[in-house]
Image 1: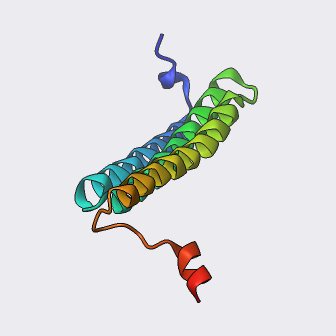
Image 2: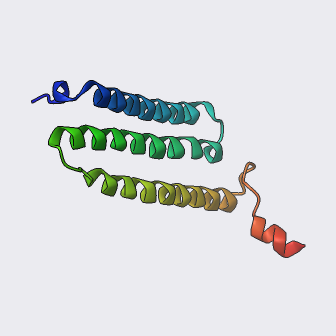
Length: 121
């Protein structure tokens, strides 16, 4: 069932580079999750890494199956749209929930409320 040997060399090279790039960017985002100290710092790196990495992997899939099936394969565009829309929304919901929790508990390391600072001026 392996169809990869049917790919021309130029297409296999493009697919391989896109896959390695996507995996590398996702790995960098994961390392950012491990290295950063606070939740508010940690939340950005995996979000950006997973979105860009997934888009590169989806591009590799589109190239591979478009060449193999000799017709445009665009199912991955829907997946890319869903990933691009849901990942930032999830980030915002998690960050707002954490800020609300930390402010209600009077935690020491809470980002400042920019709206309250503007109102006070």
